Image 1 (cartoon, helix red, strand yellow):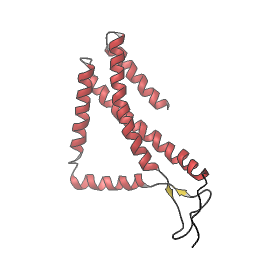
Image 2: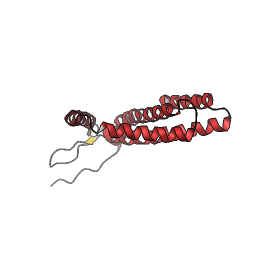
Image 3: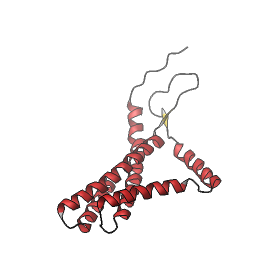
Image 4: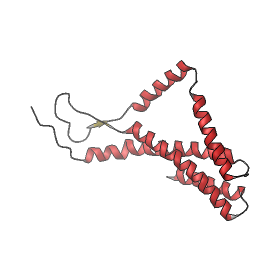
Length: 161
C-alpha cells in the first residue's frame, strides 16, 4: 500500500511543480491519477488471475478437507515460458502494438494536461508504475490471503459412490 501512496505523492509533486496555480495542479494530478488507476485496474486483474490457487482433489474421489486443499498456481511460470517462446518465435513483432498503444495514451494524457514540461513522460511512467504496483500487490494478496480464506472455509465433501 505504501507503494501506491508513493505513486500518488510523485504525481502530486509533479502536478504542483509543473503548474502555475492550484486548480490547474489539481486537474493535472487527477488526470495522472486516472491514467495510473486505469493501469492499476488492468494490473489487478492479471495479478489476480495468475495467483488464484488451484483446488486439489483426489481423482474420482472426494475433495480433500482442511489445509493443503489448494496448491500454488504456476500459471505465471507457464505464461512466462509461453510468452518467451512467442516473443522469440515472432521476432518481437507484437511488442510494437503495445508500445504504440502506450505512446498514444501518453500523448492523449499529455495533451489533456497541457504545455507542462514532461507531461507525456510522467503520464506513461504513472501508467507503468500503476500496472506494476497493482500486479504485485494483488498477486501477493491472492497467493496469501485468498488461499488462507479458501482453506478456512468449510466446503462440503462430494458424495461417495
